[in-house]
Length: 425
Image (cartoon, rainbow, N blue to C red; front, side, top):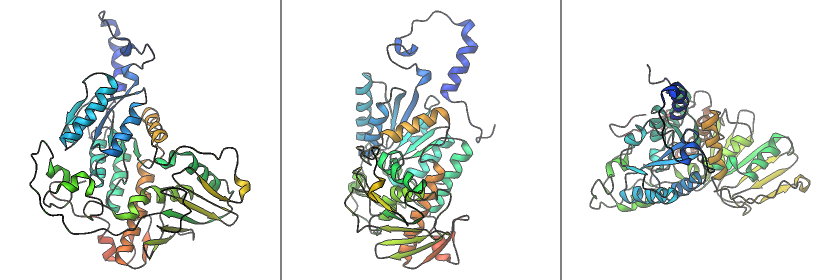
């Protein structure tokens, strides 16, 4: 059988084998949790979850997963011993046992047939490769953003999840949060009139290309430095990288446009109903980029001039009105008559609770998640294309279908990055 064939999930297998073997069953005493009594779900109704690369944001995600009674967290994989042990302590403390398994190599956790889905919250450099490897292993994936480091990785991600029929949810949780949903609905229902400009809150794009000074490399069991680097170019170990200081270095980070654009460009694509396309022109302006779609709609990426409504703000402007909103849940709007009793929102834009619930529901129904691999890949392509134009310092024209720049060999070479052997996607 081809590896493209989708295997029966653990839950599907349980449902099949229980019925087939019922006539041969012998009396067995089972705990109430196994039978779904005392307010607990039976194992066949729970989603068995593992995790790969869990730090601060990943731990927050994990606690949101644990709050759902239909999740059973079973294993953690991390190249850092202290993080493996910290996550095990969270899980074992939650369940009151010592069952959470620990792994250093992600292929071991992905090889477990009893795990249905994985939470991936590694550094950016690993997101695409870990997600693709998980999909090929038959796992559904919730992956923190950004989902990719390049245009090529974005396309490989979407194609792989479509080919293997797995559920993917990017950690762009604002698609599942009330104030951002309300803003998108105003656009979709024509309350702002004809949309002409959308604004995405991004950060200064620049990255650096130097190396931090070499430090003695720790034992592999403490920190597997070679695995930490993954597909990135080799460089000497420095503890600052491992403790989160990798951001801002080109080899590990996609720059400030991607850092917040993974959220805000994604929101603009969604609100403008452009999930299936990208802008066709990218014009660098200062620390931002002004993009134009084929129908003339403008997408403005900028890090200044916002109204103080919270991080990762967006603004949608039509010929009859506008709305701006951000992570505070508050918004500014014109005309004021567009406010309704529905427009008081208390959930912060950084809260993944509803987004994680959407993912779990989609694991069960097999319906595409709010931030599935296709829409996530496309919005990331937009961010990557903008960063390429900004680095080159010139206007770049882009083909949304072929996902390549027009008459610009230098820009097209920047759509992908070389990967260190033996890593491939």
